[in-house]
Image (cartoon, rainbow, N blue to C red; front, side):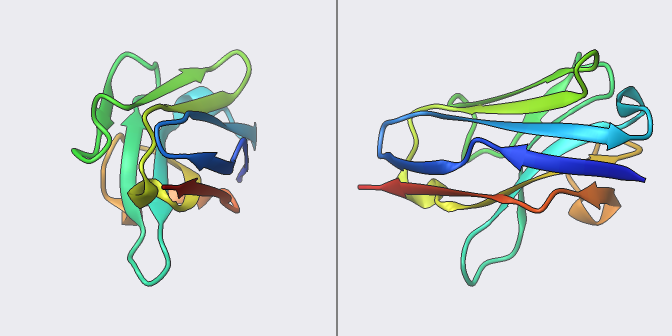
Length: 122
């Protein structure tokens, strides 16, 4: 089992920044690829960004490329999502998740955090 806890959500005006963090406990963190997902009201959960086990490769949804940065610290069992130039359409509950392979497929992620709300006002 891997337990994931997100933090860092909140409310911000358009153009602002937030940094989300996810702390893992349980099994060896570096064995898992990590992803950030989001779900807006009435919409399906979608991938935002992902990172490989060793942190050398990342991927991003087109909607956040150039604005969001995912990173991880395997020594601290954390994965972060730096979000800059936020837009109202970024408003959602953000989840971190762990998978045994790097993938954009949310169904391949075995463990999920409880989510943290991000609200961007215009």
